[in-house]
Amino acid sequence: MNPIPPNQQQALVERLMQACGGGYPPQTRRKHFITGPQWAASYQGQALFHAPTRTPISFDDVIREYAKIGIGYWCTHDTDVVPTEQLGKEGQSQIVARIQKSLSEHGLKCSMVTTETFFHAVFAAGPAAEAPEIREYAAFRVRNTVDIGHELGAQFAVYWPGSLGYYTQGAIDEADSLRWYADALNAACERDIDVAGKKKRPTLKHCLEAKPFEPQAEILLPTSDAMLAFISSGLLKHPEMVGLNPEYLHELMWGGAPRAALARALLAGKLWHFDINDGYRLKHDVDIGVGLVNPLDWLNVLVLLRAHGYNGPFNLDFKPPRTTSNHGVFAVSFPSAVDRFITLWEIAGDVREDPIIREATDALRAGAGAPPGADAKAIHEANKELLTLHELIGHRLVQILLGLHRGRTYSA
Ligand code: XLS
Ligand code: MG
Ligand code: MG
Image 1: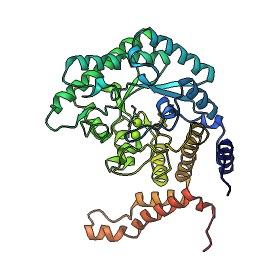
Image 2: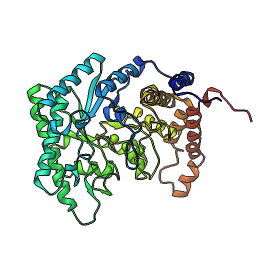
Image 3: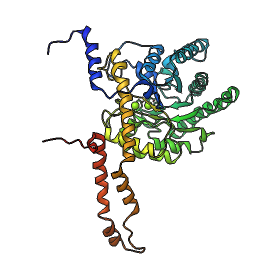
């Protein structure tokens, strides 16, 4: 092939995207509660060891492009849109008014707001540091984010306490730090009750997001299960206002099974919000687009969520790779992530309807009917042929994922 000059590359990418097919129209995409973060689309590819590969873009650009794709909801950190020095000031009100205008012009809604408590130097020791003035500042930040959330009509607030931890062992008192972190959440909930009352709006759903490592070396609330324990620890004044925002990859990062973590959150009634992406076990937070690494596991996650009626947001918290251009972020990265999600969602519907999986599952649940009082050997003997269905179900799931259940075969 001849070299492709720069002025022909966007056209090539677009032609190949078209050729991929399998895309959904914006109106179909909008039927799903899919939310697009400001920070994901505006990520410039910078990270530890990396210089940016993309140029900055504004919230207007992100909202406009999400609208074109058919992403119906937008979410943001406070400082993704308001410079730190303008938080809580007149500058913030002007920016929030411009965001409202942009959202309504493009027909998007703000679903969620979150507070950045990890980037600014003031959070070097985290939002629950020893110095009372740092904690008072963190409380101001979460209260202020609640205010922004109500202004923008959000339903959810997310908290990722990634800097709640340490690098140096023994330097902090973990129990005190957790109490202080609870104080910040209590401040957010109390402000919420106050503002919601005045505005005659429902209070926000406050969702905790765990990650096992990064940016601290050791994290005090590393998993969704740790978050559940924290919610019911007695430290929160309004535990009923606080639930979870698990992130798919964050559960893989500690070696967990995301589907099991989601099941535990569901059983606790706390699965309120879900960050969707992909990546690798026991590695850093690579935030790859949903379904690019573990499509079979993703299919099974969506089967579980459909079975248990999850109806919260699916938040596209991934990072377009550094190799993707500014143009590619909206031409390839976001539409393809949305479409893989919808396809997997639809396939999960097929799984739930599949007569083979249904009959196999029913048979497993019916058991062999061994008589009451049968001993262990007799119970095993009675069920052992049925249990082969576990592997058969696994095979069938792969067939459905690959479309082989529709009679497609491969010749040698
Ligand atoms: C970082 C988190 C972050 C949160 C919001 O790893 O995923 O993006 O979702 O602060
Ligand atoms: Mg996240
Ligand atoms: Mg992540």
